[in-house]
Amino acid sequence: MSEVLVVIDHAEGEVKKPTYELLTIARRLGEPSAVFFGSPEQGDAVAEKVKKYGAAKVYVVDDAQIKGFLVAPKAEALQQLAEKTSPAAILLPSTFENKEVGARLAIKIGSGLITDAVDVTDGGVTTQSVFAGNFTVQAKVTTGTPIITVKPNSAAPEESEGAGTVEAFAVTVSDAAKGAQIVATQPRQSTGRPELTEAAIVVSGGRGTGGNFEPVEGFADSIGAAVGASRAAVDSGWMPHAFQVGQTGKTVSPQLYVANGISGAIQHRAGMQTSKTIVAVNKDPEAPIFELVDFGVVGDLHTVLPAATEQIAAR
Ligand code: FAD
Image (cartoon, rainbow, N blue to C red; front, side, top):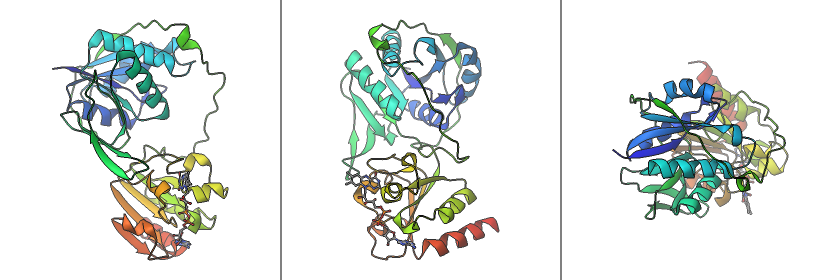
């Protein structure tokens, strides 16, 4: 069976859920091999985790020459791994960084690239939402090794035992690839909530909050959700830009998206309309958001959300 390379998404060796989703998808295309960019000492522990989701091999790439730089060294490393393994496909979690890595890799190995897929079939056909969410398209790479970045929450992770054989992979990074160096990083302050782009549930607030996000945050916390915001809420200074969902913010694809006091402008939809189930709370029954919801509540969010939070707490 052909090998499918899956780039592991992790923070200091803590494997993130999108990795397991990708391994599940990779099994439709061949036999997954996971690629770990990190410290070799963490390789065995990472392999123990990813083999439960079908990783036959785990390539450990010492990131000493990679992590202090921007994306180019990673693209070179993947090129060398692709040349060694001739994989049937290369899958990466859809992050800003990985989309650029994928693009550089595609040029290097003469392959096609598809970004932000929300589904991949066993025939390699992907589903994407394009042009600010106006169209849903099915596409397939027809040149070279398909390189596909896949959005979080695109598949439910399914366990399947793989061999998880660890193999150190030595890379040679050119001086040219080390041109852009990272000089400082600033850790984001943790909110204690799930990461917006990975969360299974996102509860967002818009201009309708009037700047009071307490009902939105309270409801989000009652169901273990991440908090998002419309641009109107961000531009008003009520929430930081990191929380913005939409065309010029983050793209989310959770199991459940709850939009509160958000009208449903096309630029907001672009960032959330591939969510599996969409619920809106809006006091205007004519609000455009109601065109795309699965469930809608016409009402004041300052009344509806505390009532819903109370109901959940009572369970
Ligand atoms: P509004 O459109 O003002 O809607 C507020 C809604 O709240 C209304 O429907 C109202 O009925 C309802 N409401 C009011 N009070 C209550 C209450 N008490 N209870 C319940 N409901 C209430 N927008 C984004 O969100 N993300 C983007 O990334 C983004 N990118 C953009 C890029 C460009 C180039 C441009 C031009 C625009 C972009 N926008 C983006 C802005 C977008 O066009 C809208 O202006 C914005 O989404 C509106 O935010 P909103 O729905 O919160 O506010």
